[in-house]
Image 1: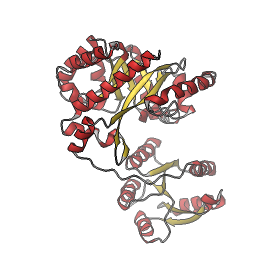
Image 2 (image 1 turned 90 degrees about the vertical axis):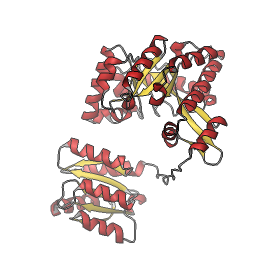
Image 3 (image 1 turned 180 degrees about the vertical axis):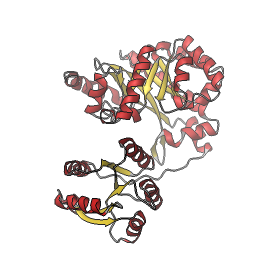
Image 4 (image 1 turned 135 degrees about the horizontal axis):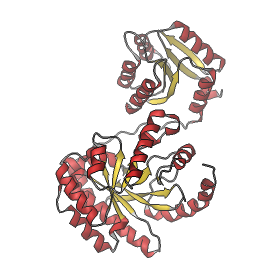
Amino acid sequence: MNNQEAMMNILLIDDDPIMLRLLAHQLSRLGAGEVTSCERARDALVVLDQRGVAVDLIFCDLQMPEMDGVEFVRQLVRIGFTGCLVLVSGEDARILQTAERLARAHRLDVLGGLQKPVSPIQLQQLLAHMSDRPTPKPRAHRKRYSAEELRLAIAGGQLINHYQPKVAFASGAITGVETLVRWDHPEDGLVFPDQFIDLAEECGLIDALTQTVLDSALKQARRWQAAELSLPLAVNVSMDNLTRLEFPELVEQRVAEAGIAPSYLTLEVTESRLMKNRLESLDILTRLRLKRFGLSIDDFGTGHSSLVQLRDIPFTELKIDRDFVRGAPNDASARAILEASLSMAQQLGMTTVAEGVEDLEDWDFLRARGVDVAQGWFIAKPMPADDLSAWIAAWELRRPVLLGRPQ
């Protein structure tokens, strides 16, 4: 163990005193740090409230009387716990996985989950993973912006596009880029879309925002073409854009003015929002396909009507949500959903894109299963258009190494 681990303050919570002693003994042998044990979750909350030194790591059993592990997670959120959390359980593995996802959704720093009985090797691997991770940055305050601020930003040209490359698993060739909008705020720096897209929809600015993003992306595509760089574009559209019956003609006009072929533009629609105003959406999306634009069903598997939408809407591309991509090699549930989505898309003649490809394990796993396109930080983070040429040069050097790996 390194010095960082040796100085950790660890809190164990389990109603079984034998399990507490066993886990404490294992941690002691690994030199993990100072250990405090509690048989009741309520006692652990008292320790967290009164302790002079912050707790760095908590091991919490899920199945406990009075207050179970899920309820304890809720209390950790309430008190603003900033350390790491490990959930431990003798229950079904899927229950443990669900509890982990819940804790992460609460933005707790979940180091992992352990099945009982906990083996020393599992514990050592988990602690090693903790020491290898970079020190987390303090969570930034999420500023709320007004509709007027956003309106002025759109009118003043403060919205800029970044582009995230997509590559073919089979060949490593670049298949295009997804356009991702950012707000270049004069005081706050780069503001990400999760802080202003909902606002744009709520205050009636989403059409102006989408047109700005689309126009900028099309102009950039034209510049790439002039430089003999062929990069098909994907642009996200809001459900609110798909309530205007003239939307297909608007897109067609913008594309024609930019001198870009309609087949070079794919519109990505978030699957979980499609069922609102379903008839109008079906009308508009069908006419977009008639005009030869590509249609992508984004975040597939996260909504409630995926199969109906696949049946009724002429999508050309299915984007498998990152929640089913990350960790699929080791998560039976995620793997089953991913493989079912892949099978359906293949039978429907759709291109499949895996979002959130983050490491070599993800790449190898998805490539072996025949997914068409990869997108994620393992390939590239979203970047300004001016950085793309340098990335392409670096990717061409990296590409043969990845393709040379056995499947």
